Amino acid sequence: MSVNFSTVGHYEKVYAFEDAVIDTAMYNGTFGTTADGKFTAAANGTKVIMNIERGDDEHLEKYLIPAGSHVRVLDLVAFVEQYPKIPELQVYGYPLPTTYAKGDKLTSDAEGKLVTGATAAPYLEVTDIIGNKSGVVVTVVAE
Image 1: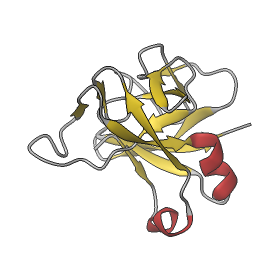
Image 2: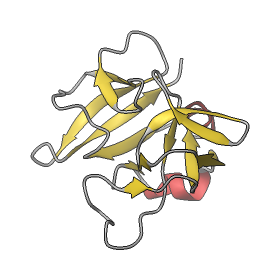
Image 3: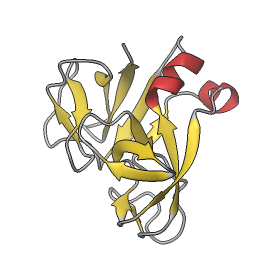
Image 4: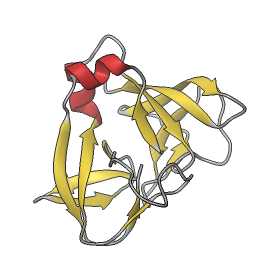
């Protein structure tokens, strides 16, 4: 349960996904890039794994996807282009940093996990804290 669309309207209007394969095991919600049909975790990643979780690990803080799996990758820039009115996502558990606050600008580190301190777009801006820090609502800033 890592990265989700913020509203049901996103499901109905947006399909900014691409199919990719991962060479190493990764967690759902890992940020990175794609090339030649492969997803790789990367610093300042503009894409994120958004697989549908299934099985015993569903809804855990970390959902491991085995190496060699096909993953559904959301392109953040294409998401904003297709749905500019409310380019929001919800992020829970992994890949959130240990500490964060409303207004923080998040980007990914080399392992694909979010960190604070983004200085240039694209980045995710924390606009709301969900529950007792169980997650955040972020606005995708593409430019």
